[in-house]
Structures are given as structure tokens and as C-alpha cells.
Length: 223
Image (cartoon, rainbow, N blue to C red; front, top):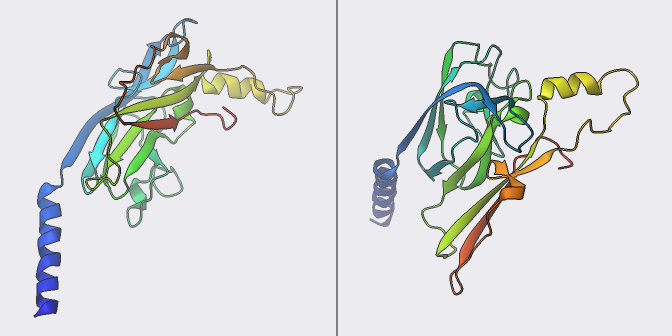
């Protein structure tokens, strides 16, 4: 009787999760945009649906994240969630030519990713260093039974931004005579996709508890 009750409870739990889980669908067209993010003049960048920065992606543990991606670039592209495990679904990992194929220009691909890890992550282009040119953004998976109690939260996304594209910086850095390891340019800082120098003052209410999410999605390891 005890084992039967346990089995029944397990089945009910699975059914409950299945009925409460959502299918979070994003239709993304990855393409070129022209933006001036730090007041240094407009430059080529890579955005989604003609926008930059990328929108926040959010789901709850147990949901399914779906990205219908159209590649509007003249080059290959993929999407990868940094720090996320793809046990049994490595073909959605987005590590091009390692665990999955790239998305060819003018073609589409659908990622169907089970939300099996709660936490703060970032999704980005994993081909041709496209993340350095803007194809990157925050992704949060909430936990229904969150052990911490708080009144509100704040998300801070930190980026580095250069005046030139990655391809131009790479071609210059490999020229003969260029000192090894010397950065061609010191990047400008971005917070939540905008010039950090114009960030508004953070205002918190006394007596409230806040969850602060800090996310570094910079393209350089030393940033």
C-alpha cells in the first residue's frame, strides 16, 4: 500500500509539472543593425528583430524554451546558452561544428530547450565571435520553490563595446609587428545594454529585500 501510494504521488507530481509547464516561444531574426551605443558614432552590429540590446529571456524551471531563429546575416550563426547543460539535447547547444551545425544564411532553425537549470545565464552567438558584435543577452530561469525571500530584484548586465567590429580588430591584431596580448583598443563599458556613463542612480527602498543579479557577458576574458 505504501509503495502504491508513493507511485501514485510520483505520477501526480509529474502530471502537475507537465500541466503547469509553459512553452516559451521566441521568434528571432538574427541580422545586422546600425547602432551608436557609446556616443562614438554608429557602427555595424548584430541584433535580433532589428533591435539591440537583446530582450531579456525568462522562463520557469520545467518550461520549454523555443527559439525559432532565422539567419538574416550573410554568414553562419548559432545560439548558445553560456553555463547551461544540454544532457541528451547537445544538438541544441549551439557550439557550431562541435555539437551542432551552424544556421546557414537565409535559413531557419528551431531550438527546443528544456528549462532544467534555474539561475542567471546569457544567450549569445557562438559563431565567428558574433557575441562581440552584439549578439548576446541575459537569460533567467526562475525556481518555483525559491528558498530565498525577497521583495524585488535588479539585474545588471555588464558588456564591453568597441568602436570597430570584431573582424576588423582581429585582422589588425594579427598583423606582423603587433605586440602579443596588447589590446588594440580599450572597450567602453555598457550596463544593461547602454552607455555605463549614463546609467541612472540605483534607488532602493529602505526595509525592502532585493535580489541582485550580476551578469558579465563581455567578449574579452580580462574585462
